[in-house]
Length: 486
Image 1: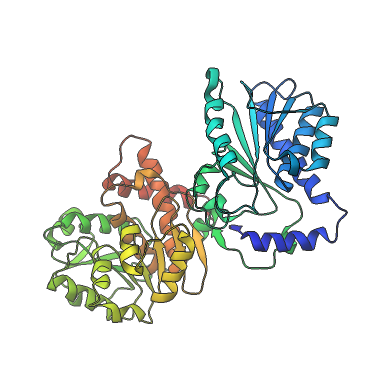
Image 2: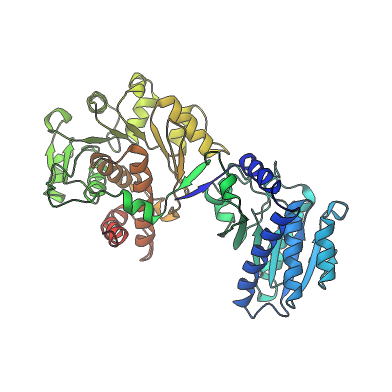
């Protein structure tokens, strides 16, 4: 599992490491890794020798990394030019190294470039780019497409202009093809709109790992993590020991929500799905293996409940929600269940002792928390998780899973294909299935989000996507994910 650390923790680790090394060692390590990645990019489009490389240089160490990397490329025959935003605060040793290698400075963006190295600001910047840098970033977009030649952009540590600790993009910011970061990942690489600006993230080991003694700000599960978490039946398993999930969603008005939630649950690891609600006839007709009843009280034993989507908010819906929350079982609350919590009539149920997962989109989050997630989506999700004593799955392109204990995970498999009606119903059903099979709530939420995102990508390969397409893609996605397990 990958992990990301906040700037203050990175800086503390850097200070400890630098105290044990000769001066300048960390910068030389970073620059060597940066130059190596730039050379690989140039090799894909004709080679380093003769390539036109533009360095955008701000003040401080970030600019120094770029200058030393530019010097290494110049020694290999690249034509390296540096545009200095603050000549009075440039990293002098780095600039001397560039000039000694045959590179030179310019005052304006050149007409053409094969590669642009973004060394404007690094992880110490805050508050967005200053006007001169913001204007330069706007002009950079014109350079990239000029004369039909698209210059590759490599960001040094982070794309200039992004908020490193939150992943927000408060104004103009560089959009990189590759971001080369040093020592460890930072939140902007994996969370919020900044993650998209990073492009492909390459991590250069500069020896920082042993000094990162503080817990990470974020964890990022990958396919191996999710495959290991995914419950697998054994030779002694039966439909009950694999888990039974209860689905209390949909209604006579919105039977589709029930069908989609059940579809998501059936793609999960449980051995049985039970449905409770007024759409029971439609559910059994579409899914004969499902055991259905009109009320939660008539359903039979389950190991977890999913409640909310398409349920409505009338008295019958409130009775259903109250029945689910009265159990001592893990519960997933989605859509209309969140609306009923928001109106206050079920607020007392938020502090239940049994595990609970809330799955808001931004609008529902705002009504639950009293304010929108804002620029710090991870911090906002953690705050709501602590207040509700529930795991919060905050939906978005980079879905956040936050726990009451202060742990945060971010899902890397998101796709715009998931922005379609009913997609969340499928996700809730899959999540409930994982809970019923015995996964801890945070793992169940992270695994469901990951597989849901992969299924959305699979479905989108064939064209426009609907929620039934996503549901249909879940089974082959799970099969592929777990196929290499022993």
